[in-house]
Length: 54
Image 1 (cartoon, helix red, strand yellow):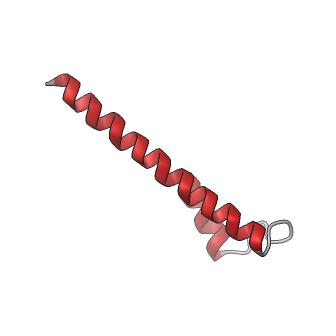
Image 2 (cartoon, rainbow, N blue to C red):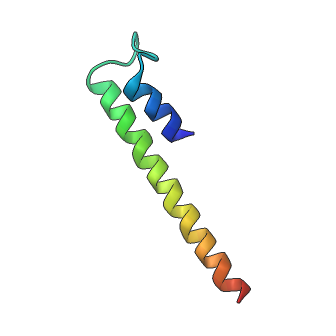
């Protein structure tokens, strides 16, 4: 979900009237970092789950 919202912020005029300039760039970077963090946590969880089943 974060990746989708970051995409729309990056490539469309969505919420342009309130988020513009540096605030917009910070929001996009925060969403991308959060999406990376959640993906990493999912990867670690799946890896640990696979190890427990062995």
